[in-house]
Image (tube, rainbow, N blue to C red; front, side, top):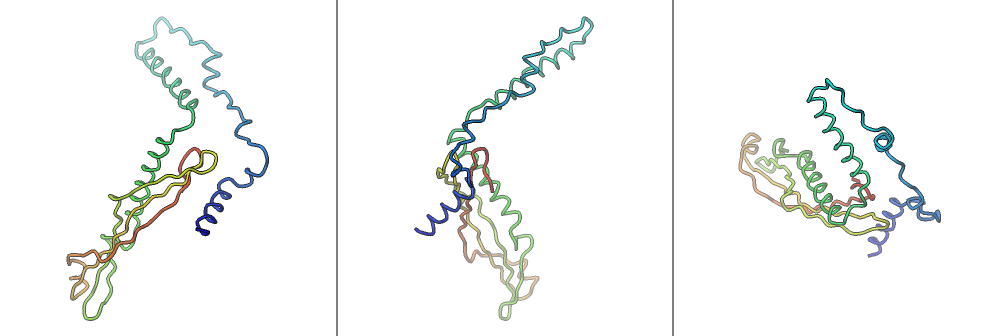
Amino acid sequence: MRIFLAFILTLGLATGGCAWFSGSDSSDTQTPAAQPEEQAAVAAPEPAPAKAAPAKTRAKAEKAAPSRSGKASKASKGPKSEAEISAELNAVGHKLAAQAARTVMPSKASKEVRKDGKGYVASYVEVDATNLTTEMRPGAKGQYVGFIRYQEKFYECRGASKKEALSAPCQQVRARRLNELIRYDGKSWQF
């Protein structure tokens, strides 16, 4: 329990730093500046189309106007809900597990072969991303700690020679549970 509390304290100090001890909250005092696109849209009226302007040009201008307002609505969107943050954690968890599956060594495509008594054993590791689970716990000031849990499965293939071991059917000999910790800094998951 002491180790867990020390870990949480260390994580809190690493993410918050000295900002917790400065006595002022800079996030409350900052006001967002107006976006240059918004200023231009408010200050300059839309030019009138020329008499000989082709229909394609007008269509492009009409399509461009809604996209500007779409960017402004995304920028003015409030803080994310806990469900949205949890969904992002799940997506990041699947991304990390897929990355681990691609980079784990020895892999199924590149087995490790060793001599075992009179025979040979080819072994590899496979990441089981199908049973991936994620959990999110609240932290300080809109920050969260995310837990990504998945398994690594270890396989062995036995044969009388290296070639036979590489082509022999494999059996799972053990599994290892992994628990990855990542943090949410208020905008995105940091890993």
